[in-house]
Amino acid sequence: MKTRIKRIKHSIRQLIGYKPPIKSKSDPLPNKILAAEGITGWFSRRECRRLYLTVAMTSGPILEIGHFLGRSTACICEAMRDMRKPRAFRSYDLGFRSSADFKEYYDRLHMTDVPVPSQYEEIVFSQSTTTTEVATRNLRQLGLDSLVTLISGDAFELDHEKYDLIFCDATHEPHEIEANVPRLIPRSNHGCIWALHDMNQVNIERVLALANVEFCELTGSLGTFVYRGD
Image 1 (tube, rainbow, N blue to C red):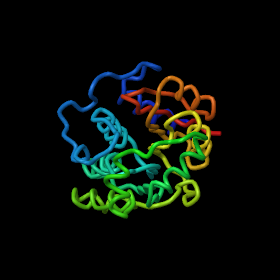
Image 2 (image 1 turned 30 degrees about the vertical axis):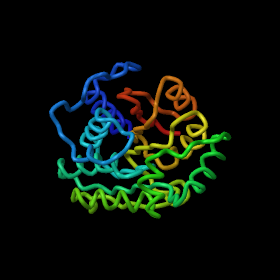
Image 3 (image 1 turned 60 degrees about the horizontal axis):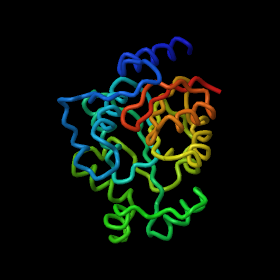
């Protein structure tokens, strides 16, 4: 097990030029055009490429928490397709069908009034649909839908498997980190790679305080960590 963890860490460090806690300013794949970039979302171009490379350099089952309209999901699927490495891949997003549903959840979580992003109103709620249904259509148009199981619901309530790579887009600020990072632990194999969105120095330090992980690098706001175990 220790050998496997060292091997994964070595691959990640080679991949990202490990010098913690340095922030990467370069484009990891300057000449790569990802189909995923045509999907609406808050995941930047550099973050798309970093996630693609992280998937390409790892193996084993993948969990995504927060697929929104499928931009990050498509990055993961493209890497799997291009590397010709089929992997179990489950992706979840909360099944809000209205702005009221959205606010009931996030106002309670953050203990403040949280505005509904315009993308939810314009693309999802106005069409009486869910993010999962939109993401499914987007991935189908790119020929990537067969590579992932998209699920509408709370991953922490529905999924109790263990994974070797987890992309989590539910770590926007300390309240979410404190609520969700401890729940990543029982779903992580030793050596699991965590790719957490919306990281900054404060959020990174909070993750390190809550879990036995080693921070690798920050690309945009995508933070990469290696889970060392309980």
